[in-house]
Length: 534
Image (cartoon, rainbow, N blue to C red):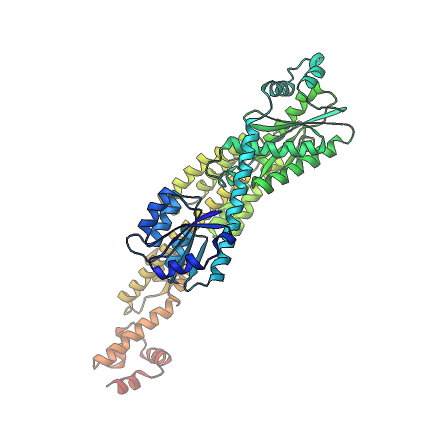
């Protein structure tokens, strides 16, 4: 039976829920009914329930405060809110505090029963998970004997006397029969999904959970022996005959899939080449370690078979400048698709060159510095950019896979692109505003032109025309003409000046052309406009 605590300041509601709910039939025991959150807190401290049913609006301590208290202090207690408040802020807080259900009043006995059954399923699942975790911890305590582990490690290191191998295998009850042998090693790429499932879960338990799955699958195939060594990594020695290679690959893939399914951990398995005697297993294990060295380059979540790697790799150079130029162009044109495309192309070139981890890092650092050198320093004046550059360069060594570095490099490129675009937009706005100010001050000059304003701003006519149009929605001539006609209208309305005088005042040396332009803009001649306005 799961313990339930009911909290509601309305006595009639407490009584109705308490008496009309079939607690025992639903798998619950009602251990208390409180009229406010303060009373409930005191009871929870004394006897923590499995389920809290609470209202929101209550004196002393409301339902949200009570829910927060349970969320922070009693992680195993589920919370269901029964409230008459259908407001987003309450719902948002409920999500924050991991409330399993938010039910609006009035609530029927059927609705409450359905909710209780749903919560019971979750409680049952958690209880089963705790039981399974307890079993794993128990199995961990009864791990393989120390001497058995030492023998197997010695076998991988080539430190076992050939004459004593058979006796040791018998003494330690190790089944390694056949004419061929292969070594393999399992490494969890990221343990965090498993570690986040249980607050008390430790890294060594995650390692053991991986080992446990590998052991069970190896045993089901009768494929060889599994043990933990070398910083708790799971190591396997396969044994068999002519079809050993096929079986080993199949077992490795099945182990990988099972670890992902049950532990939510992606893992990489390095597999060494087959050898003909147990005394040569160390050679297969060296292959395994070599395969794992390429995990950084090739990426995790796969089986890396040493047989498929190139032998005697010659150092190949990667043309960083080529890729840097393409990435810089994509950054300058604010093309995020191209940034990703060329970064991934650069990474692929590293893979194809089969360079080591250290050399890959060297190339990546060179790439970052090349990008920064290629970009105009004046457009990267923000200190945040240089902080991000420094953080990127410092974090490279901490990455497990080249793919992770690639994503950071892509994001860095996007940040640079956004920064350049923002500063470019700011510059264009500033120039456009200066041009408008120039028009405002010089519209009466008949010699004002596109060339004169560009000379004033020290810009090319084509570039200026582009940014001015983008910012104002008008060409320079359109803006100048509008300003002149607006001033002319004002002079017509407020002065008794002749048309030719007004034309001259607003920058037109030809009164006839002024009249044509005025009519084109206003639909009237200056004379017609004057008659209308006076």
